[in-house]
Length: 196
Image 1 (cartoon, rainbow, N blue to C red):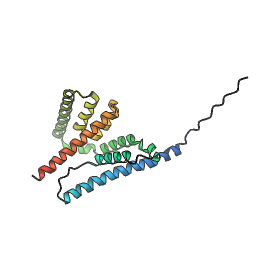
Image 2 (image 1 turned 180 degrees about the horizontal axis):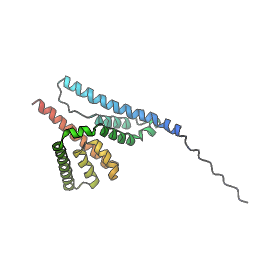
Image 3 (image 1 turned 90 degrees about the vertical axis):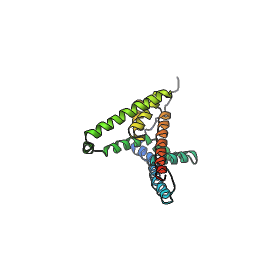
Image 4 (image 1 turned 120 degrees about the vertical axis):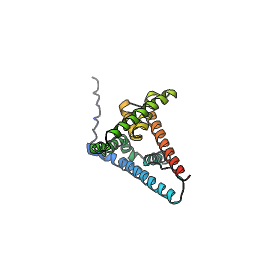
């Protein structure tokens, strides 16, 4: 008679234990984000105090640079990886909270003419960026991300649109880098113009 084969039982991970595993990574994400905010404030203030011309680099770009430095030098230890993998959830939650700051009353205070001008700007920017994307033969999803990022509100719009159009990480990373670089360039150009 054939021997019975026993299959080992896989024990499900307790929800509390699963939650505890993400906490170190979430704290690391928060620390990197806060460090990016501190760098934005302090580097700009230091440059201004010493009369240096330095572009106003947003904290998002500082946080990305810090993340790249950490991951490419010391690496992300295993204890942080589970929590760091939740970054997309926190980005989306941040976008929702950012949008919640604007109340309907504030929008109504702008008035009809302002809202029409905003609509014209968004449509014009989307149209122009789509035209440029086709001229440079960019992928349609990359073109869409660049158009939305330049027309609406930069990185937040790119991240929100990425999930809606199912763009890959390479397209979204390129779009975010391009929008942040453009923002740093424009900010630096304004700073240089102020000293001329």
